Image 1 (cartoon, rainbow, N blue to C red):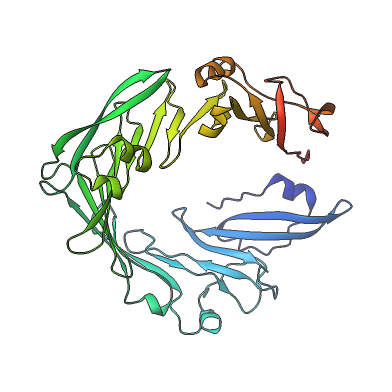
Image 2 (image 1 turned 90 degrees about the horizontal axis):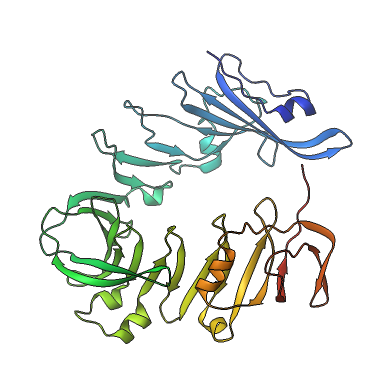
Length: 377
């Protein structure tokens, strides 16, 4: 069965000029780039052909090269229906105005010379289809694959960290606890060896949460980054290598090196602490949009960075307002959907005419940015 999908705008604006192969299943997409009066004068066109199983087999950029020739991407599958090779696009010697190419790779040598024109994956011979090896395009990478190995952890290989979480000011507060070491076979262990032989080991639990990313520096030294989740499966801590290698760390170490995250009852990130910085606070409106942020320097001055949105959810303008604590500001914004409308008269601030309404958190002290959008279509 042939399936034709043609955008309505295409039917309205002009007549189909491409000579598609009507014996094939295809999707035809035409994007108009310029016009004169009511007529399109410039467009780009892509034809995607499918095999009898509905899989893409050829993508043609009609006259897409600078010389006005077709650019074709060939797609093929192995005996198990897997796409093990990804081919580079091949500029053709001419154009068939959208017609399918029976030998799409025939012009490859004139474009790429003797270079290998596809990347390839060696896939596991199992229903999991996991990648075991991947080689990039080009002859230089032929002997330098990226290798993927799949295993389970051994006993004593990974420290077990968990959290005890309490609620403070409407946000989670998680402290790290040590639970010894993971026993053998308790974690998934994925090993990636890049083209230069550098090895990265990723440990995951049964929930598919990444617990540790280990960079192997030498036969005796690793750099471990630990990811610690709270009881609600939210990322609460990131412990970088300089901190994770310490058997015990002090509060100063934690403040200087650790990443900390806290969430409200709706699962929104409301407080975060990055290495070497003070706490940053976030406030959301009823639509879960980030409305206000505050860093440690702004908090000393009781200031907030506010972002207001227009009716389509795009940023209208940003500015600085005065305000109280995070819980106080969140309480004010909690039941509001903050939308400012375009307004020709608007309001004036800092000597600028702002052509938007100012209906929420009106006491803006400084305007930082304004965005205006066209009305197309």
